[in-house]
Length: 120
Image (tube, rainbow, N blue to C red; front, side, top):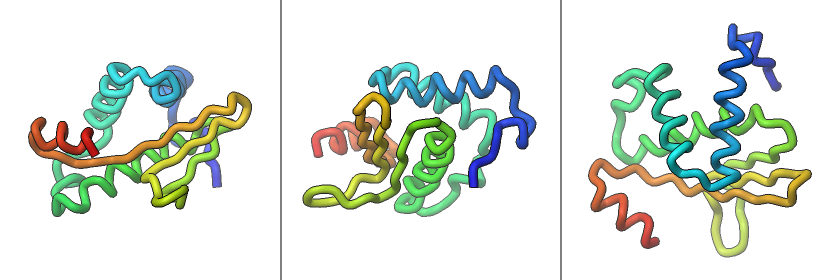
């Protein structure tokens, strides 16, 4: 079921922010992704939302991203889809542009751990 933004009291400005955030993934604009996601999280979640075991934190962010990407017209968004020798957390195919986006989420409390994940 797809909901129009107005059903949740959203306005055109918020939809523009959502689209810009999603397009940042398409354009590999990591600064815009970081800025947009941080701004969204500051407006929507509390410490209680992420107060869970480390292993489960990725699932929380995974679900948020699925919801955001699912609002994009022409984007085929899949969660944990099998591909090749494994599966990716989130895969997106942008139908009219023959573009694919693969997202693998990792939670790390410290930057050195994060850099290790990047090497994988």
